[in-house]
Image (cartoon, rainbow, N blue to C red):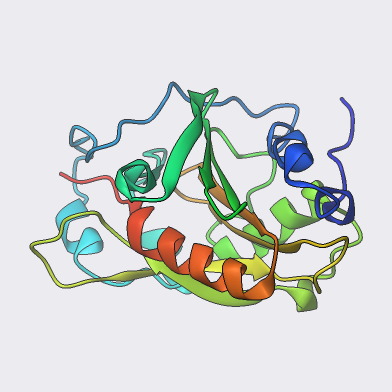
Length: 219
């Protein structure tokens, strides 16, 4: 299997953004059927209180509280935000959104991530995911950031921790990748954002954090 394009190449233009994300999975990893835009039908795991997990923040160290083998999903709420439009809709787990100022967001959900997972350690697992995407990325260059955890507006906002790679702008593009591999759940979520300027990137990432929550499985 061909190695994914390096992030440096992606920054050269938004048109190649999907070239990286298409190759995110490990050769042994499969992609899911397209995730829904609303909360998933609850999956019951005996002895596991998914509601309690969903009601709390999910830092990297808390990944073991998820049910084994039950994937975390990605919302597609950005499609409803003025100024954004869908340019790829849940194709093999991947969606792409474009904003009228030239920003693009790619999301990808992948299942069966055991080949990259470090048991019980989402931080190490996510570092391995980034290393698979681009071996030149050092683990110490990844910074913890947070996205929204759960898409229900009638409850207090919770946060889910991810790792982010934020290189310097290059080639007229500002670029950021945020990801988390949920080792226990067996799924990974990937967000790539590319914009024509750092200020536009900051706004696009704020939209991602607000409108593309990670959806916990619930009982």
